[in-house]
Length: 74
Image (cartoon, rainbow, N blue to C red):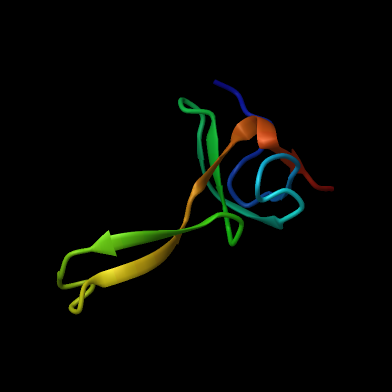
């Protein structure tokens, strides 16, 4: 499936609770019509202890936004 944005593009969110926020596209999931925009939709994720995260706990991660809610800048 073809999308109008790709990884690394600068985009603005044009609809939803995060309207007006701008950022860089970190990943595109064309099958689910979702994009992850840096700093646009922060989510809290609980993690167990592991080698990567020895203390575990809560991590802030960027959540997905629907492809139709973003506009490519430039």
